[in-house]
Length: 413
Image 1 (cartoon, helix red, strand yellow):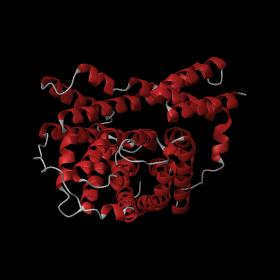
Image 2 (cartoon, rainbow, N blue to C red):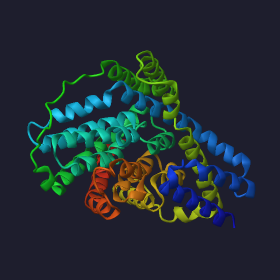
Image 3 (cartoon, helix red, strand yellow):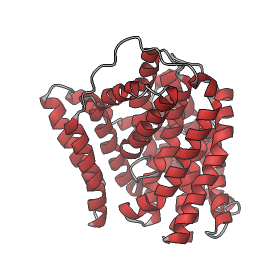
Image 4 (cartoon, one colour):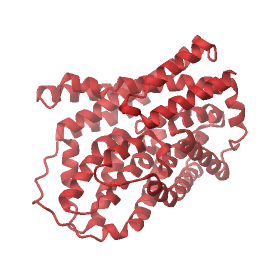
């Protein structure tokens, strides 16, 4: 009975999060669902508190990064990125696509996939309109980079933060191990998207206006660079990288307030407290399902070992599960099952839950955010999104796992 109740609660939480009727926050169902499971005894109060306490540092880190990304937008970093992309069209749209890939990958890696979807994608769409070129290839580039390019740093994605905690690696060690998978995934995505959208990319840019001068927000770039260095330093010193993210957000926040680029209410809104509550409550709901019978069932389908075949199998299971229940619950389900096998298995799960969501809209919340962002500029239905994903995702997944395996053979973990 407890398992049925837990699975039903999980289905309700995920269904609401995916549909978001009236754009209500995900926490509207997640908080009552977690409370119901505690009240019904499906999970004890102590176990729920333990789960929340384990997720709290990750959620705090996420909050600081969300604010940092929003402040970068307020100060003009993303506008400057759009201007640079517009100026990159001298050699045609292939150069524009390359610049979109490069900037999207960098933004995703450093400021998280949410920044790419919510802040950079509108800039890319506006750039396509100004240049009178089809937006489709460039919009899909931001969607796929938001997922695939989030492999590199522990801060790039909430799934990374969870895997980082489970893997037991330092910030620099994690980043080094994921560099080859990151490069491999980006290269595959670029080549395949360029091939898929060759007809759209053949249209010559016709700028409606002369390119505006590029005004680089140097202060913001310096703060982001120092924050990134701070992630590595705090990790080496045994402290949470969240402190570096908080310091960067405070410095940029003070600057933006002093120059009237933002307001205190906007900074508080960037925290997205309802989403943070959703993450914590989702963790409780998933933990309840695992404790009441889901864990043994999942154990039977996870490959053993950390050889190439096992890593490919683990990543494939993670990718499939992500497209069944979304990648956030997928990583919460799978990490406890593979942690004992070592960091290689944990990173294989991460590859699956980060690249796998490019297959369907269900795969990640970022996909649904992207769909709402691009809706006014292009029709990107479920069938088209999945068609593009079916061509790119399996190849990118295999390439990334091969990159991880090659790193393990050359250097070890």
